[in-house]
Length: 508
Image (cartoon, rainbow, N blue to C red; front, side, top):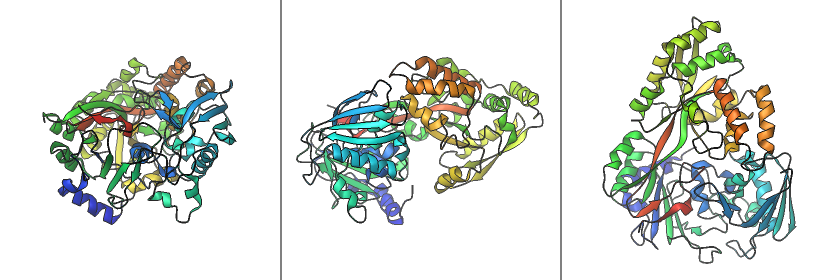
């Protein structure tokens, strides 16, 4: 995401003057005071159409979702009190909470839901695709909505508990200049204090006086953006920041020795090589599954995990996470480090002399140690890996130009299986060449139409097939660390790398 020059300057100021970034009022962290959260995620805006991934807490402060996703991934009522699918799972009926109002007193009702969902699907936000299966939305009366789907979508409840379910005041949709980008208007537990906020660096939220639901434990919430974890660690250690997520292994190790700091581990992202070109359009060798298997066998996952991540994570050969229905434990070790077998597979496939693999490299994702390790491992089987250094702003171009056969990335392993299937298996961003085969064409419709909780066998069969065909070259699931200054209890959130805003509470 783009950072303005002023935003970077303000972030630097926060790094050297943490007291000014933690928010004012009572001591941060205690019940009834201000909760101060540090983040390295910068939201594009506060318009729900732009909500995405780890930026969700910025939006949860001011907007409620139709459905609430609990920390364990289960669903509970929020703005919708009930929901029910038709027998063929192509129609979803929602019953809405009565009496809820937006900030200006306008009623939240079925017409507002229809307006929000239709607008969300038409906008160009990163999550607009999540409503692509929605064929129509009907406001049956003030408190009932019918959502008709072009085909079953097992992730629809998840989406309505995520960005697509955020509800804004439709009156803002027609105002000039898209005011929601900086002046949110929702039904949420807090309101943005524009006078105290510095958009791009610090967002200050104060409790909404007439919130319809149960009050969260803090009178206010401040979310501060940082461009490095060193400043965050210093802030947490001194108590000027209450909570944060740390991804860097060195920073995790450095903070764990502080007796005042409380920590909670969570595995969410996996790091690995996403093989886009399974049809061999750019690199003919990748069309042969034996070549893709050889790449997997070449990777010394255990050594990489030990040296690069200090052992913080779990080596794996599958993209399905350990809490998902499709997870198969033995697939974590499906590809042991075996360069000799890898060379033999390349020979069988007609590439005994190897080939060249040129990949884009974003320094923040692929540091020198990882870049060198991958080059060494692949060179050992005759594959020459070269790096094309690009900046983070080039990511969109990578996916639109389709100029690279693969890319090393950090990607989530959602507990909701169809989220992962939709992102990584169906044609789209990470399956940009639309790879498919007869096995997928057989399994995917069955998984898609299955009632909740009944597709486990087919999901595991899909997972085995993806691993056997070596669609991906995963390295390891990375262990992240939720940290607090000791005054806050942090509960990890299923389906998100960062906790939901609702998952913070006083430690005592």
